[in-house]
Length: 124
Image 1: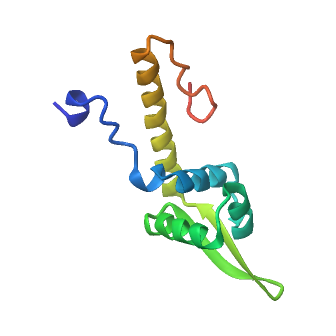
Image 2: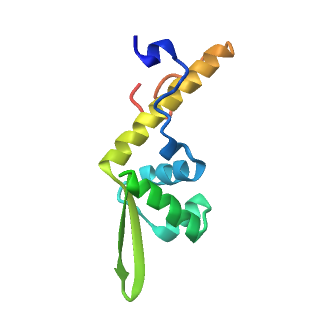
């Protein structure tokens, strides 16, 4: 018997690296822009300071979820961030666990849960 069978509400796939609020916002932003986003755009989209954004990107980069490219546009420094293939896969796996959690919570509350993939992220 696997741990999931004996503990169906353990939600092992809720990755702690992803689950933090700011990093969840960063990954969601990067999913919406597969070619990547400039540091300043990510900062604005997620409402983070330069320091907070840098720290969260470092954590995501260390985990292999995000690629950060530094260069120049003209004479100005330019940093671009994008999801890695691994980051995209892990984020989609994470979303599947969240959808399972929502279904379980709705069932426990006696309500019908939305169908899997209702948001168009996962196949129905």
